[in-house]
Length: 422
Length: 163
Image (cartoon, rainbow over all chains, first blue to last red; front, side):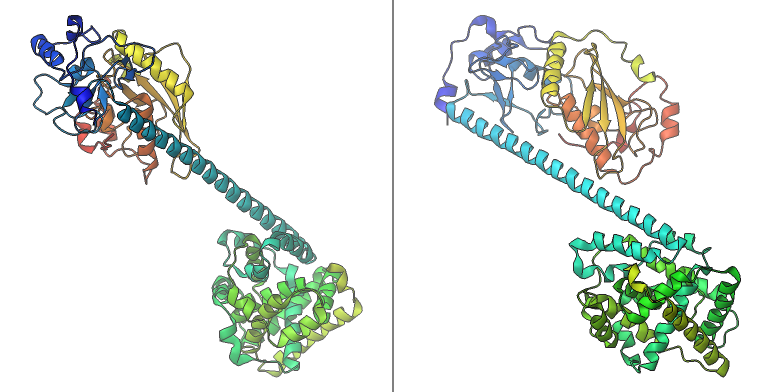
């Protein structure tokens, strides 16, 4: 291809058989050079132009433009004769490498002016390179955008955590506002909204919670009440407990354990500890005069089962709480919850699937349009697990539990406006 | 700057001058991603700002490269160093010297400032750990006169980047 044209001997002006002074050539055999140029084995030493013109080729080393150039045998890249002479390092033990592809024993040949075919091929090649560059740019932009999105998402999630944290710790009413945040956040992934709260939590959140102890007496009361009412209704499904709880649930006791160990103290049975704790906290509440309106509203909402948000919350508390058999780790309960708020990943397909349990029936009835089945299912899991290990053993314990429950119920009765929190 | 002692050089050759002017024009038209040439009137010394590639250890970090061109550029490699502070990298000494073979023995006149920059960014991006070379202290101590890693015998640990 192009051989005929390229190999054709050109009449080369004598002055182009010598270097034009582009470099200070040393050790150049001028005789040999002249011979090679006259035999068309090397391109004539035309003076390079600084500006491009029609039918000119650029030497990729000196960036000057020439009527014709040599080609490397290995990779057919162009090079002008004077640059080529520079490449051959005199007195070097190493064979010269091709400056373009690093092939050893660099050698060039001269085919004259590039044929049309060659130029066409080169243009196609250039076009491909340009296209590839454009693709690269596009990919870069796309990646950057994705990264930005991710950063924004995590950023907003963090904000939510902060909000949830603060509000929840100030009072229990915050549960409702937290829920609002959740529901906004979860619009895009409805199925996972209930279950996403059970994500294994980042441990950092937890430390903040340990000092907020007496805030959640209400929670404990409510939990106890739930437990009792369930028990009374004879809806125990102890056997199903291990199946219902998923890995996420199981993980929670581990978080809770250290706290619990510190506080369990002398209780002889699981429920004994529970009852003691309730009693102790009840006393404490009276002393400190904690506002009861919040707790009552919570109780109400629970008793009427009208608020799915409370379901969520309570259910979560139960879940994290029950396996440890101790009421005292209120902070842990909080923690579990807050952690849940922080992360929105879609995890719990199975949990959502396990919604049709005893609790769900009543909950669904009460909730009406609100699609709360997943949540109630979660609660159910928690509740069932509660019923399993906690059975009051001594008379005292039973009494204490009963007291706690009646207290909770009384509060629930006295202020029946749980709906306002929804 | 220890590095510039060797660069008390002669002026650029005609061919070097011509090539650098064209490289600069090409750079302005199509700069390599992540690099910014700081405009000066000195063709022989370029200062280039490098931005760490996103998703790498050096993301959101910027460094400055100083590129000094020898009289016989491009037949000789330019001297490329990081200005203080040099990035923490197993092949970048604290004095800014870079262990990269294309800057020394594997230099080819077919390379350009742009291609050097891409190689350096690639070197940064492929790093899995932010640390100095093992022999950093010894090297920097012996290097007051601004010699390059090649002449220090540092080539053994040089990263090989063909092309």
